[in-house]
Image (cartoon, rainbow, N blue to C red; front, side, top):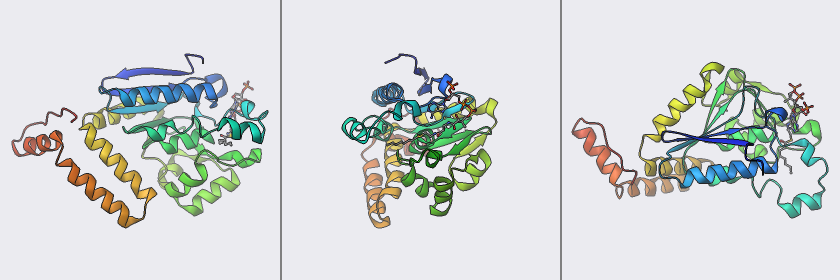
Length: 258
Ligand code: CO8
């Protein structure tokens, strides 16, 4: 594994992971996905980290799966290797909030990676799409499932079947991204948001993330029951009592993340 295909740094309570294969527009190969997965799990296990940012470069967040690595693989190869399943979905195991800071192309697997994050901050240069149909492939890293849930069936079908790309404003209108910012402000704005989030009680963040994700994964009544249990469980948390006391005492809370 090349050590530099992802760059990893800590900024206060925020872990930052930069995809770093600029020569191929951050095309996602096994080495990169393994390194990304390792970095994500390390930050998730680090008590000093409250939120994680994944970003790419100015031209591309990631232009999709590395086509040069896919072209020679057979059905038997991808089945045996558990291609995609094996190391592409580590981001979904992360309990802490994960933000994608996207400039340039987020295509195919790159778009699907962004969709697997909790919040997408898009620079004005961002272009989102799932153009796999042009290769006679399909958006096979969650795209056909997460895109309709994110933007509805009509828009998702259009993008999947026509390979059309969305610019940042369209992505914002469609509800695909959380915020659009100027390219020059992308990292500052995303880091400020991540730092704000990471300053809240980590167990509360984990409970909120898990509950919001339930909205996509269960029927409403089941999701509401899950949410109610999570809300009751907050009363077992030191931070929740501290947060409520601090409000009543008109002082900032001091969270121990417990
Ligand atoms: N894979 C490999 N190399 C890539 C990729 C990629 N996905 N994207 C770009 N590159 C390389 C180019 O080959 C080029 O390399 P070189 O300089 O050595 O020729 C370099 O990056 C720069 O790219 P371009 O010269 O093409 O730059 P342009 O600005 O002209 O175009 C585009 C940029 C529009 C992003 C163009 O590069 C492009 O269309 N890329 C491919 C986008 C794509 O099709 N993505 C989907 C890939 S498939 C996928 O993600 C499937 C996920 C799930 C699979 C499930 C399988 C079971």
